[in-house]
Amino acid sequence: MIITFFVVMGIGLLLLFYMWHEAHQIVVKKHELFLENFPESFNGLKVFFISDIHTRVIDDRLLDQIKEPIDIVIIGGDLMEKGVPFERVSKNLDQLSKIAPNYFVWGNNDYEVDFRNLDVLLREKGVKILDNTCARFESGDDTLTLVGVDDPTVERDDLDLAVSDTDDRNPNFKILISHNPSIIEKVKIEHKIGFVLSGHTHGGQIRLFKWGIAERGGFKEYPHTKLFTSNGFGYTKLPLRLCAPSESHVFTFYNENFVK
Image 1 (tube, rainbow, N blue to C red):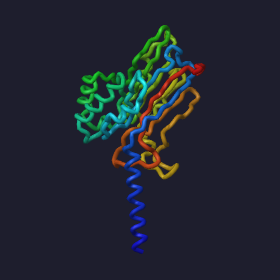
Image 2 (image 1 turned 120 degrees about the horizontal axis):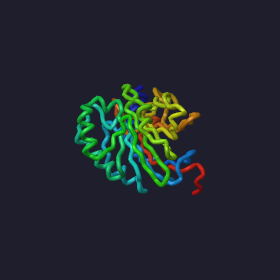
Image 3 (image 1 turned 180 degrees about the vertical axis):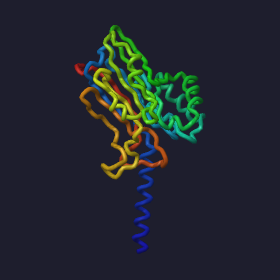
Image 4 (image 1 turned 120 degrees about the vertical axis):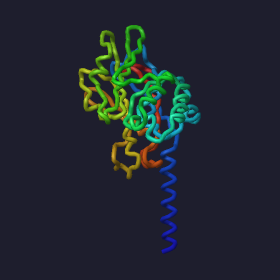
């Protein structure tokens, strides 16, 4: 009986250590996307995407994994949560600014804090806030637009308003950024959204094999667009993950006809 007790205790401790490791590892996943109607003049565009940082610290170990030059950094919401000091957030933003210009959408946990102070901090750091607005990039006759919505979880999103800020007079590929992937339910074919980036779910954070409170992150195809949901970089409530490890991402975008 005593031996069985210590065996079970040992297995439990090993499992807890493994779950702690999954929650704190630093992984940058690389994805190459070949998308219909992606403007050829933007072939090779590299975007670093990180969401759900929450309480974690971004240090040089993350930056060291990003070997290639990055064009854009997108922060997909939940940059912080209640109890996280603004000094830590400031240092995290300094780290991300070393990579490339930063663009940010609000997450539900960002509203747990004094979000007005967070807004001021983001602007002081030169971060472009996409709160039902967009950012346009032009190359020749082509336009690439980042469309960002405020957080759907707290019902601050307005996709129609965000899209109305875009310009369809030129060939225009739109990438939609929303903290909560539920925005996909509001995407219409007339919005002409080519790709959607999101986080929020943590991939379920703690899963029992294929079962969890949310789907694992990854790609999903829809008739009118494609969605990617990240497991996220941080965690909430418990500093543990299981079968949904921490992750961040580098996306390289190409037109579907591009040949490497």
